[in-house]
Image 1 (cartoon, helix red, strand yellow):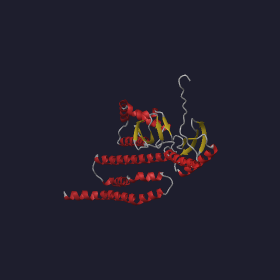
Image 2 (spheres, rainbow, N blue to C red):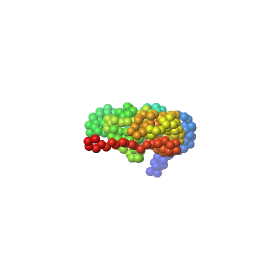
Image 3 (cartoon, rainbow, N blue to C red):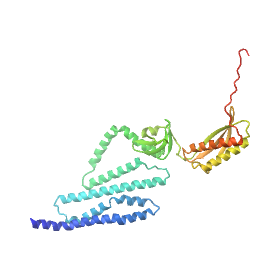
Image 4 (cartoon, rainbow, N blue to C red):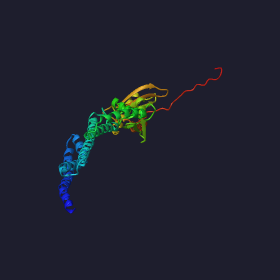
Length: 347
């Protein structure tokens, strides 16, 4: 009995040593070599190498261990069919590990490509999850094929089951495909400031497989089903350019010198643009007289701001400064005046 135990121990010592050495090499590669490679990748302009190295990080030790296990497999004598089962298990673990790495790399590459399109193709949770699911399904099918299991019955069952599920989840699938339609049609994208036909306004935060989340300026989150958003009338303030025009209407007395008013107003407007960080500096403020009002001559001052929301501070600053300057220049902003003629009966 003791001799048999000693014999088994001598047989397993080389195998265990090889596996243990593989694990140590994996930790060494991860802590030293991989860390230096990550630093080198961070110095390059291309972000793809950073994504590749970050995706590999959590699988390095596992791959070294599997490689050592493969090298030591000749010394593992479990007897049939357990040796074959163990080899299949190692193969499946490797396939699934590579599948997860590829899914991370592809999602990261999609994000890089999306950013390079300058909003032309938004990368959201909907697309990233879809890619992950497709890659994982392919990996699982390859793993089943490696076990010599025919995947044809599985695909057939998946098709029949998918039909039943699609009927049961009709509303959910409607939201899912509506989300794809919203993204591909570029109706809205994450980061856009939009206004719905129901009156809600806010920044699009994310487009998931079921809902689109929109953040109001009051910091509240609105969740909108994708199927409703796809059919809604939406005003997108960022569809082409986030910059937009701001109009401020002012009325002055009929006794005012219009050329002097123009000069003073444009001086104030130009100073406001220079001091306001949200104003578009390359846009020169404009002023246009447009109406003889009941008690005033009305004019409009036009500005441009970088994005929606920046106009509030600009308008506030302009009104305060213009009011102060008009008082200093003696320019009157009249109160509404209405003349009422009262006639007695018989007149």
